[in-house]
Image (cartoon, rainbow, N blue to C red):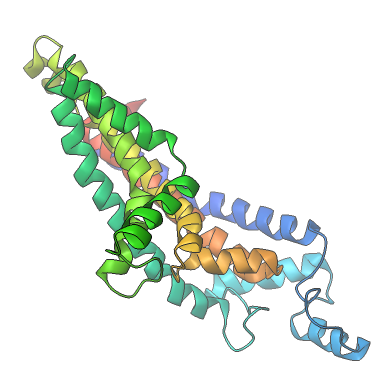
Length: 297
């Protein structure tokens, strides 16, 4: 257990410097892009433009802008003002959109596990049969279809033809079904394939009890996949949120990127980056608990 605790501390200690590197790269890359936050606005007098630049410190040298932005972030947790929504701060927008994105990601992961695990177990206990081939084929289709294709198909069938579910928005459980299914299907397919492969390896080994005594688990590949899978669901929600008009961070990110809203883009990247790193670290720690040998490698 001591080795696992040390491994967990090492994994988590890498989050902060990695986030600092991500923050620095985002700041630099955004400033290198052509155009500025107010280029899409109507033409204003030069005095008004200078006043806007002074208000948002855009008239300062880039290094001073970076020091001011990073200092506010580290010392006060202040992500800065937003150029697109002058009456709101970036912190307020993140507080509005993040719970929706997290809800979509959690529901999608729950759906993926609820579908993928039983399908993988069912397929592994019937190797070489027609049922196994059907389950494997369904998983392959789920992995092959991108969300840009799955989403219109779901809308066409369940909204426009059968009139069972709303096309978009995020207001009731009926509005949540299509975005959750669209987001979770690829992950469910991957979980099914990993579960099947892991169970076949264990069921085919002799003896099973000896393998488990060495710390092995038929679900270890699935657990190791959960971190990247949860991260992928969060990042993939950018597409799903835009298609289904879900008011999460994804919608704000797309609009901020189009309008060169530096602070809002950086905030979304940092929030998603932190979630990705923490989730991946949590999955690695869970794998170390299942197989302690991982902690001493």
